[in-house]
Image 1: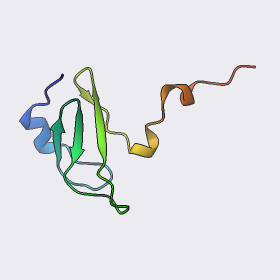
Image 2 (image 1 turned 120 degrees about the vertical axis):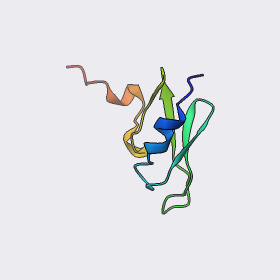
Image 3 (image 1 turned 90 degrees about the horizontal axis):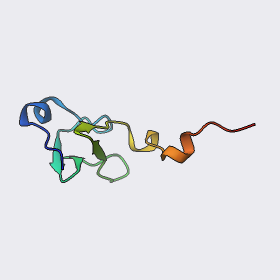
Length: 68
């Protein structure tokens, strides 16, 4: 599990709620809920937080280009 430094956590903000983030295992979790009452969560891949809005973080198979 990658550890995000406290310095980085101190400047990162959730792109959905604008709240601070906390590390819970292999993901970052917003400290506030969005308008729908959900708590946004962001994966950490190889030590790098993936800060895409949850609806923008499509699975890899959906991003493949169509074949002709």
